[in-house]
Every structure is written in structure tokens, then in C-alpha cells.
Length: 307
Image (cartoon, rainbow, N blue to C red):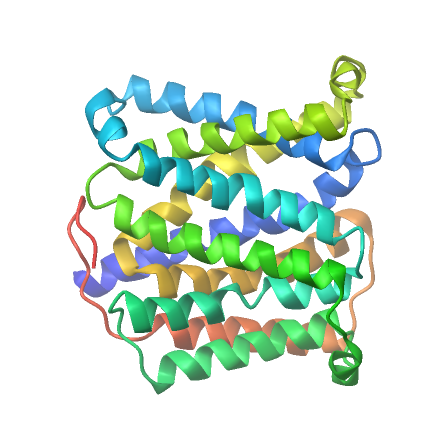
């Protein structure tokens, strides 16, 4: 029964990189009408309100645990929503998409190391092998089959911002596990998302001042924003935080490696982009790496408890 439950969790978590992967194409189109910070702020304001309504409807939104964990929740909003999106959007202005993709997908590597050394999560050679194989697969895809591209990268202003995104997400991932010991995952996600959204809103007003354009967006762009707010944010964040609570930060973060792979096949089927041999090899390696990482034996924790 425990094995069946774990398999169910792993299958459900596949939706997270699927929704996040689909966000690349929709975001690219939205940015043709709206600036990055304003787009992010609008996305997370809608998502935050939806999650707060959901939490309230389920009678999970109580003031005492929020008050007791206020600074942890503020830290989650500041890292997983505000700083991650700010660093990522800013970093892309100074570096290539290839470099950005390679830097972002090292999230699981840093998460695994920190979770193992500082949070007591189990670590073994299987975990390391899975991370290396999946990282190799993603590298093959984003370098278009020429891994020599990796040796030509330099650390510049854009790379520094992107490493800020990595640090933000790693901190967010590890804090979620700590906070979810005393407060429900849904409430954690709802409150922290709204806090991060307010931060993005303030910064977007100061730096971009494009909110007057929101009412004049095309129907397609509005639908894409709704997709980002619901599927790529509400559902994906809730499932990701639930996964951390159930199987740990290391295993949940391994699914991030599937995000650029999903972005690739979605672009192929929905936008007519061509697929090559290195795409297929890279996707196979990435899936294999995630599979190896998630096959380590763990003890499934009851609802409301974490490892």
C-alpha cells in the first residue's frame, strides 16, 4: 500500500513541471504586451487571491498559526515569489536563454546538498547519480547537442542575477518543509504568495508603471494570464509544497529538471517548433535521472507530518 501511495504521489507531481513548462510559451506572448514585473505581479495577485479564497472556504485560514509563523511566511513570499521572479526577469536582460536554463536547473543540486547537510535528509550515491544524469540531459537540450557551449560561458551581471534566483528557490524549498510542520500547506502557499505578490506590485509600480495597459490587453493575453495564475501558480505551487511535505525537498525538487523538457515538447506540438535527436536523447536522460532520484527508499509520512 505504501508503494502504491508513493507511486501516486510521483505521478501527481508530474503536473508541476508540466504546468511550469507550459508557462514559458504563454509568458513569452504576454511579454509582447506587458512588461515582466507587471506580468509577474498581476499573475501572483490573482493567484494569491484565489488561494486565500480556497483556504478560507476550507476553513483552514486561521489567524493564530499565521501570526505565529508570520516571518517565515514573509520569507517564503520574499524568496519563492518576489526575489525569484525579480532576479530571473532581470537576469534574462543581460544573458542568453541557454545560460539561464543551465543555471536555473541546478536548483535540485543545491537543494539536495543543503537538505542533506543541514536538514538531515537522506543522501546516497543513487541520489547523486540521478541528479547528475538529469542535469546532463537538460544540458544536452539547452546546448542543442553541443556541450562545448558550456565551456564558453562566463560569469557576468546576468549570471549573478540568475544565481540569485537559484538561491531564492532553494531557500524557499527548504523553508516550506520547516513551516509546514506547524501550518497547513495550502495556507502556507496562499499567504506567502500574496505577500510576494504585494512586493512585486510595489516594485512594478516603481520601476515600470504599466498598470494602465492591463485593461487594454487582448483576449488571448488575458486567457494566458489566467492560465499562469491558476495552473502554473495555484495548482503547481500547492502540489509542489504538498510534495515537499510528503516526500522531502530533495525528491520534490528533482521534478524541476523536467520543466525545460516540458517547455520543449509543448513548443513543438503547440507552436510548430522542430525537434532533433539531441532533444530526444536529452529528454530521455532527464527522465531517467528524475526516476533514479525518486527511487530511493523513503518512509511515507501521514498527512500533516513531514520527514
